[in-house]
Length: 121
View (cartoon, rainbow, N blue to C red):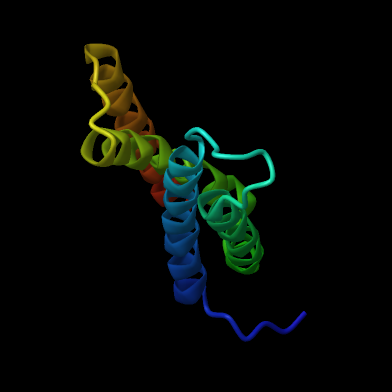
């Protein structure tokens, strides 16, 4: 199968997948507030679903040149991005457990990266 997307572009799409994931979660949180009426259109929920659709499309494009075994673990960066967004935008508290968990995620990604480098991917 011939593809017109380079490996670098695929990784760029993966970065955008992360961005749309965070944007969608922020929009969902904003849309989770009280409704004035049950029939009211909530623009934040619509934006959240739009981000979901765009993210799915970009995810499919990124998988054209990145093995799933490489791309999927990189999505764990979302946990760190969502934690940061929740703290900065919504002033949600960050616990010691959140910080320890973040370091564990980063440690896992570093181990994963070295494993891939030694494997030759």
